[in-house]
Image 1 (cartoon, rainbow, N blue to C red):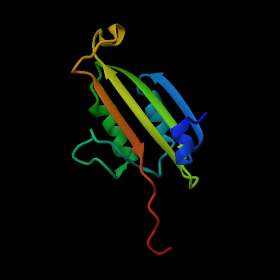
Image 2: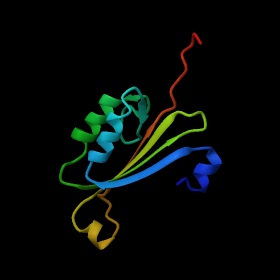
Image 3: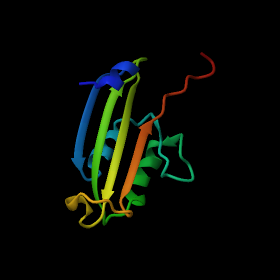
Length: 121
């Protein structure tokens, strides 16, 4: 069910999922093979990232000793183009159970980019 912001921006077919680990993010990205992504933490390239590069960043670039929680929101924008927002939160040690702030925690946001139209159209 879309919230108020989704309704104002014209998003339809809004689905939200949450899971432990990185599997949900990996499945979502593999379902959007033809799309490009943007992620601020994937320096030096932060936009126009191909799905193989973002998968490599998630699988090899994120530390394995963190506990990850993944939230995925998929929807169709007002033009009917499928979009996805992936939020990954990595916690270390007791900060997750104690609900305390830890400066070593990781927060990562990955979004699909709007496909560009070809110039000959």
